[in-house]
Amino acid sequence: MTQLSCHGLSFHRGRSKVLDQVSFVSDKPELIGIIGPNGAGKTTLMRCLAGLLSPTSGAIALNGQALDRQSIPTKAKAIAFLPQERSVHWSLQCQDIVMLGRMPHRSAFARPSEKDRKIVADAMQQMDVGTFANRDFLCLSGGEQARVLIARMLAQEPDLMIADEPVNGLDPAHQISLMQILRAIVAKGTRVLVSLHDLSLASRWCDRLLLVHQGHLVADNSPDVVLSDDNMASVFGIGMGHLACQNRLISIPTHLVASSSSHGSLTEGQTHDR
Amino acid sequence: MTDRGSYRYMALICGLGLLTVLLFCLSLAMGQQWISPLVFFQEVQDVGQSSQMVDRIILYDIRLPRALLGLLIGMILGLSGAVLQGLLRNPLAEPGLLGISASASLGAVLAIHLGWTSLFAYALPVSALLCALIAVFVLFLLVGRAADILTIILAGVALTSLAGAMTSLTLNLSSNPFAALEIVFWMLGSLADRSLLHVSLAAPFILIGMVLLFSTARALDALSLGEDVAQTLGIRLGRTKSLAIFGTAIGVGAATAVSGAIGFVGLIIPHLLRPLVGNKPSRLLFASALGGASFLLAADCFVRFAMPLRDLKLGVVTALIGAPFFFWLLLSLRGKSR
Image (cartoon, rainbow over all chains, first blue to last red; front, top):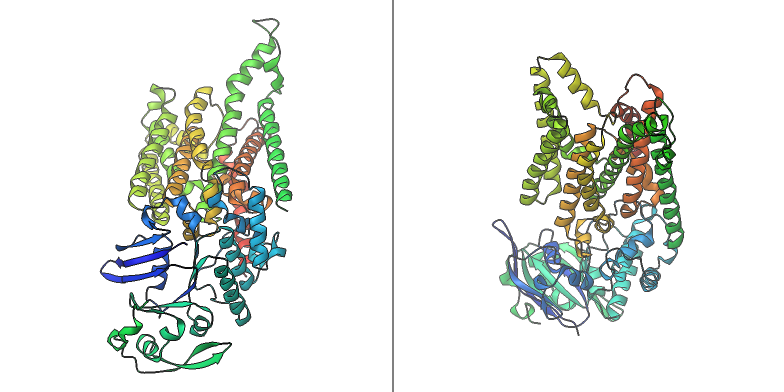
C-alpha cells in the first residue's frame, strides 16, 4: 500500500515561518481535509506536498521515497494538483483539457493512444461531464469547470490528489456532489488531500482533518475530535453547533467566542496523537 | 471527436503549406519582369547570350534570396509570436517584446553610421547580428538569476528603450544626411536587394531558433492550465522559458539583422490562426510558422506589385495592415470581457 509521510516539514519565507515542524503520516487511501484560518499555511503545505515548493527543512516521502529525490516524470505520474485559481487560459475543448492529465504517461511527441482516450472518456464519465467532450471550457459554469478540471486529475491516475479549496465558489448541490466524487475517488484507492474553509463539509465528508494554525499542525485526527469546541475557540475564535446526521456528527460554526489564540489551551491528547 | 479536430488541423496545415509554396513561387516569378521559376529546371541550350541565362541570374541572385528570406523570416516571426503568447498566456505578446529587434537595429545603424558598410559589404548584417547576440547575452544573465518571466519582459522593455535611444543618438549625431537617410530606410524593414550570403548568414540562427521554439510545444499545452499545474504535469518550467526566450532571441535577432524590423507579423498571425486550431497552443506553432511565411511572402509580393518603381518598404506594409488589425483586436477583446 502506498504511503505519504511528512516529517518535521518547515517552510520559511524570509524570517517568517510559514510552516513549522509539520509531521503526519497517511498509510491508507483516505480523504484528508486541511482546515485553518486564512494565512495559516494550508496552501504552502499543499504546494510543498505537490513538489512545487522545496521545504526549508524536513522530509516528505511518497511511496517510500523522498519526494525531492524523485524524478520530475515520476512525481508527475504520482501526484495531481488542483490550485485554488481554476483558470484555463485559452478556450480549449474539455476533452483536450482532460487529455492534458495523460501528459506524464505519454512520450514527448506521441499521439494519444486508445488507452489514453479510454481513460479520458472514463474520467469524464465519472465526473459526469462525458457529454462536454467537444464543449468550450470557458463557456461552462463554475461547477462544470471544476468537474472538468477534476476529471483532468483523474486522467492523471495519481496516487495522491491534492486540491486547494476545490469547493470554492460552488453552490451547495455542487459542493456536496464534489465531496461525494472525492469519496468515490478515495474508495478506488487514491489518497485525496483537500483544503476546506467550510467546516461543516469537512466534518461531514472527511476521514481525517489536519488543523493548521500559524504554520503549526495543531490537531490531526478524525473530524469529531479535531472540531472540538476548544480547538475551534483557540484557532478560529468561533463556537460550534453540532448536529447528528446520517450517522455522523456534523459541526457548524455558530458564533464568535473570545479567542485565546494560544496552543496551550489545546489538550495534549488531541494533538499529534495519531 | 478528437479525430475530427485532427483532420481539421491536418487540412489547415496542408492548406497553409500549399499557400506558402504558391506564394514562394509567386515571389520568384514576380518583379519587373515575369520569370517562370521553372527556368531552374530547364536545360540551358545556348550558353552565353541566352535570355534564359539572364533569367537564371535574376532568379538565382536576386529573387531566390528574397523569397528564401521571406519564407524563413516569416516563419520565425509567426512561430516566436505563437510561442511567446503561449508562454505568457497573453494574446498581446510578440517577438519585439524582448528587445532583440531593437538591438539588432542598433547594430545595423552603427554599421551604417561608422562607415563599416563601405569597408566590408556584409558589415551591416554582421554588426546587427553581433548586437543581437549581445542582447541575447544580457537576457541570459537575467534569466540565469531570475526565472520570473515578468522580469525578463521588463528587461526587454528596458533593452528596447536603450537600443532605441542609442539609435536616435546615432541619427542625432549623424553629420552625413545620406547616412541618416540610409539608416531611416534600413529601419523600415525590407527584403529587397539581399543576396544568398545574407541568407546563409541568417538561416543557421533562424533554424536553430525554430528548433528551440518547436521543442516547447508540449509545455505550452500544459501551461494553459497555469504554471503550478504544468509543473505537476512534469513540465520543467525554467527550461521551457529558456527555450522560448533564446529561440526567439536567436531567430528573431538574425532575422532583424538581415531584414530590418518587420513588425506585427508575430502578433497578428497567431491570433488569426488560434481559433482555426481549436485554441491549442501546441498546434498553433507549426500553423503560425506557415502562416507567418505566407503573410510575409504575400506582403513582399504586394510591395513589388503596388509600387514596382518606388521601393515601398516591407515593414511599412506589414505595419499598415497590422496596426488596424491591432485596433480591431483590442475592440474585440474588450467586447469579450463584457
